[in-house]
Every structure is written in structure tokens, then in C-alpha cells.
Amino acid sequence: MTTLPFRMKPPLLPAEALRRTLRLARMDGISVLAIAGAFALISGAARDLGGAAVGLLVAAAGAAELHGVTLIRNGFGSGVRWLIGSQLYLMIVIFAYVGYRLGHIDIGPMRALLKD
Image 1 (cartoon, helix red, strand yellow):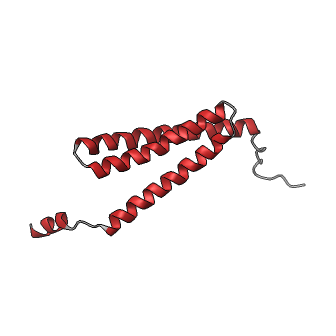
Image 2 (image 1 turned 90 degrees about the vertical axis):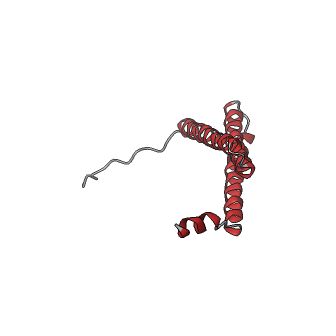
């Protein structure tokens, strides 16, 4: 009989998997909310209304994820939909912003750099 050089770990218990998932979702939600909120404030202070709006839209995804975590911790299964929905919403906002920026390229700053 041969011995394997490694031992396979047993699968996680459902309670442990849930705990890890909620911890990760909470950290992700806080990170997205804090970073996007900070950039929204910076953009707003610089009078960049478009940047501030996008920052607030992204921050809403973080808030939705935190709401989903709270629902799950309180025993509501609808929190899973909030977690999934927040990620889909975030992806849509990012793709829409990238599409807008690709469609509306401002080459003015590049011209100024090339003239020097």
C-alpha cells in the first residue's frame, strides 16, 4: 500500500462555509463603500459631477452587499439575492462607465503633452 504525499482536507462544514462567505462579503462591501465613497467625495470637491455620480453608484453596490450580509445574519434567505445582485449591479456600472469613457475620448490633454 502506497502512502500519498499529502492528505486531503475534509470539506468545510456548512456553518464554516457560511461564516467565511459572510466575512468575505462584509469586507468586500466595506471596501467598495469606503473607496468609492472617498473617490465620490474627492470628485465632488473637484467639481467633477460625473465622477462623483459614478462614485456614488459604485458605493451603492457596497451598501447593497452589506445589506445582504445583514439579512443573512438575521436569518433571511433573501440576503443571498442582495449579495449576488450587488455584484451584478457593480459589474453593470463598471461596464457602462468604461463604455462611456471609450465612446467619449478627450484628446485635449494629450495634445498639450505632445506640443511640449
